[in-house]
Amino acid sequence: QVQLVQSGAEVRRPGASVKVSCKASGYTFTEYFLHWVRQAPGQGLEWVGWINPHNGGTNYAQKFQGRVAMTRDTPITIVYMEMTSLRSDDTAIYFCVRSRDRWLIEGPLDTWGQGTLLIVSS
Amino acid sequence: SFELTQPLSVSVALGQTARIACGANNIGYRNVNWYQQNPGQAPVLVIYRDNNRPSEIPERFSGSTSANTATLIINGAQAGDEADYFCQVWDSSTVVFGGGTRLTVL
Image (cartoon, rainbow over all chains, first blue to last red):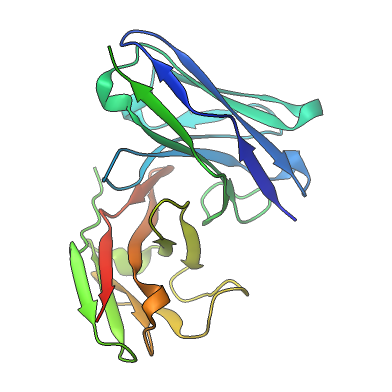
């Protein structure tokens, strides 16, 4: 079955960086876009961006441009999200999510990872 | 930027029909997706492209759209449907979520 398994919780100081991973399995890795969505404590969902595992192409929400980078390691079917210059308001659960439809960017978000808690605190 | 407006909370009596609205200018021209999120869990896609239901989602979940409002409809609401619900669209190659609605089943 389709599965996304994320790395464990992280704690960082303000100004530091973090790299979160998402291991995909159960489908052809290069055929589906992967997104990152975050959720601050008690808040709603916020889209961070997507990566095309086929060619490494990315698109980030304007709010995060210059501070986030999504990459992939195709042989081991893992995508990464690195965020720099962390602030306290980056404290959130970060979800890795797969697009429902093959090759389609603008479609529903189907399978969700379990989430990775990032705490940014001095 | 494009915004989706949802009520903070909706209440429904057990077994009755719940309707959760998602408002935006001309939302009827867009594909709307809906997600259910239970406390401490990842969201789950319950409706996609306005009124399509993934195979694992019960038939009591459906969706509809009009010019400026998309609606998630839950017929015969059950206690297990009590959760947060988020609408979502695409705008200029970016994903936009509504603020979310807490559904309470009385």
